[in-house]
Image 1 (spheres, rainbow, N blue to C red):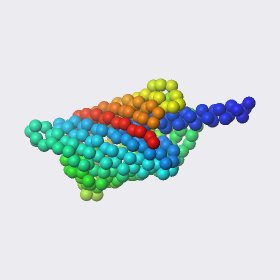
Image 2: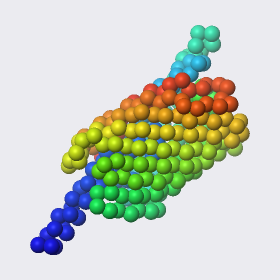
Image 3: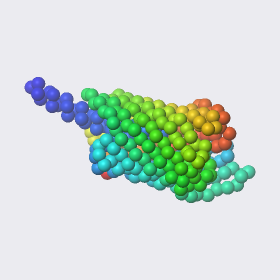
Image 4: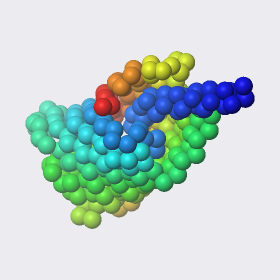
Length: 260
């Protein structure tokens, strides 16, 4: 009887951890939890960024592949568009900066319906876009980001932290970046997954070369059912200092992903 209880508890823990992973990552941040090896994820996260100079949109096509259960490689190919205010009178669309993403999970500790994990990541930005609008939309210069992500998740809540440095040898986009997010599931865990999550996410960026600083807050909601996830968020600035151009007024994010 004791062995039976152990087996049942172990299976429940596996199911709950699977539910946690399938609920989807934070919307504006990242998390260290990965799916199984040979998984393929197709996703997008449209950004509609409003500034005093105009409106700028980024629609990326993202292809993620997990060769193993603790590694991930991805490519993001974005289409960007811009519509400047009437006094400037410019608008159009073009290919944005292509991103190459790599992640490796180097630490994992699982408990009963909870887990803590850490990954190292790099995001290489290729200068395929144009220098039009905010750097987050299209900068047109090479950039290399290197960071560490740590996260804890249970069936009650999830917490993610990320810190890293973005280098731009030929531009002034060098930044120290820190992100913090909390996710709260609203429904009881089920299998297959059917969940609604609320996300409360903060992002701080220190622009090293220009001495600029901003802290942003994003309020998001996410719906996950089976292999499909839909999400939406509104991001607004809390603090902005020494940012003279393309200061964020608001950012609307709309995303979807599907796991194969």
